[in-house]
Structure formats: C-alpha cells, structure tokens
Length: 388
Image (cartoon, rainbow, N blue to C red; front, side, top):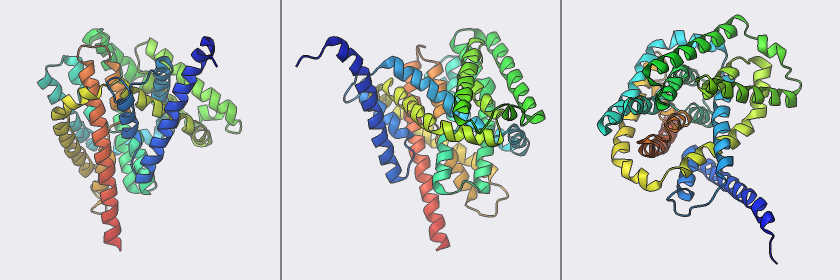
C-alpha cells in the first residue's frame, strides 16, 4: 500500500513529536526511580539524538524551538508565582550579605572565559552561567527530600530569589552586548530593566492583592488562558524593547498572590513540566557530544570550584541554625545549575565562540545537577543514620 506524500508529510511531525515526548516520559520515569532530577537526563537524551549523537533524528525544529522558548518562560512565570513582592523585599533585607558572598560563584566562570580569550560578552555570560543556581531543580530537590516547610528551605529559597532578581538587569545587558549594541546600549537596557523591576515590586508591595482581585480563581479555564497569554504577551513586548522576556514572565508571576496564584500554579504546572522538558531536550539536540568531550578538561575544574563556592554561600546562609548539618543541605540544594545557565548560553547563539560555550554549559549543568543530587541524598542518609 502506497502512502500519499501529503499524508506522510502531515504524519511525520506528529510521529517525531510524539516519539520525542514518549522518550522523555520514559526518561523521567527512570530518573524518578533512582531519586534524582530528570534535567540532566533530558540534556543527555538530546545529546544522544541530536547533532553528532549516536542516532540523529530529523525533528520538527520550529516546534521544538518555540516549545523551548515557552518552556523557559513558564519556568520563570511559575517561579514568580511562588513568591510575593513582600517576600522578595524581606529576602533582600535578610540575605543581602549572603547574596554578596554568593557573587563569588561568578569568579570561576569569568576566569575560564578570560583564559579562553573570549570577548567581554563571553566573560560576562560565563560568569552568570557559573553564578546562578537552578531554582527549578533546587525546588524539586527540596520537595523530594521532604524539607519544603523547613527553615532550610526558606533560607535556600531566599538566596534563589536574590539570584533571580540580580538576573533581571543582567539578562538585558548580555542580550544588548550579544546583539552588538555596545556597553552604552547595555547600560540603557540595564537601566530600563531596573526601572521596570522596581515599578513591579513597588506595585506589588503597595497593592499586593490588586491584580489578584481583578482575576477570578473560581474560573480556572479563563484564569489559565489569561495569565498564560499575559506572560507570553509581556515577554514578547519586553523582547521588543530590549528587556528580558524570561524576567518579564517572572515579574508577571510576582504580581499574582493568594488564591489566584495557587490556582494558576496548579493549572500551569503540567504545561511547565511539558515545555520545560522540551526546553532542555532542544538545548541537548543543538549541542554536539564531541564538543562536550573536548571541553571536559575545562569543565571538571569548573565544577569543583562551582561546588566549593556554593558551599561558601551555604555556610553563610546557614549561620545561626541549630542543626550543624543544615548549611550542608542548603549548599547541596544550591549546587545544581540549570534553566538560567542554559538561557544565558542561548542568548549568545551565533557568536564565534557560541558552540564551545553551549558545550561547556551543557556539561556543566549535567555534572553539577548529578553532583548536587548525590550530595542531597548523601546528607539525607547521614541524617537518617544519626537519628536512628
């Protein structure tokens, strides 16, 4: 039986997308069985089936590209929904000193970029990649380990919030430099970013429930479409004016509190998981595994220093806690890098060193996530033995 060409053309994208999602589902099942984050395995899957992988598949690139963009936006939108502007303000006051110490994590990336002879935009980008922890992976590790309502979790989240706020002006700066706008243009972009972020925080503190009163949590379908559409619209407008679309989505989430925020989280969580998986898969598909192997001599020392500097941060955050192991758990939660590191690397796509940058970022995210997950399990088992 001969299949018409038009039918084959229509069926192929469905087969590719369905097969990719099925594979990601099996990978997620496997990661859950061994108790670690699925993120590094999504990246490895992309490496295995992408450019230079063991079996290269011809995926529908447009779909995965758009899906990856939506995934990044949803990760940030849901992260914003986790916090209120008052919590952000409190975190700034309580953890400012620890936040300054946390900036040490940018140093290894900056040093490596200088050694490799990259231009200023590469140096700044690499500093951000090693600086920022993965809020999504950290939150998942906290939930999986049963520490969601603990002081350890609260302090960990406070430093994650500070990192996300620092990225609000940082991402527009990197974007401006990557586009060749220059330092002056970058400074203007940063000024716009700081102004927008400040206005959003001020609106949230002064009228914490204003936007939540406009929306109705009892109409979940309308709420889902309204908030999701608003996040995408805000991200698009932000990108047009030189602001970060990802941070715009984060700020939209910040403006929603209470029952409305909870309802949106419940509705959007499955969509976030779906598109975030595509986000990590797409990054892996675009990276050649051979490029990763060639960067391991740089990445392994980078991971070692990245773990050490996060433990310095964890030690600072954990001061005053009664349990002497608390700071170790905070440090372990902060070790994995993830979505933001990949977003930063993606901003520089097309530049002369972007292939090497993506390879370094992919292997750095994979290794730090594996190490961080192992450390969380290690400290959990030590706690169980001590209490038995």
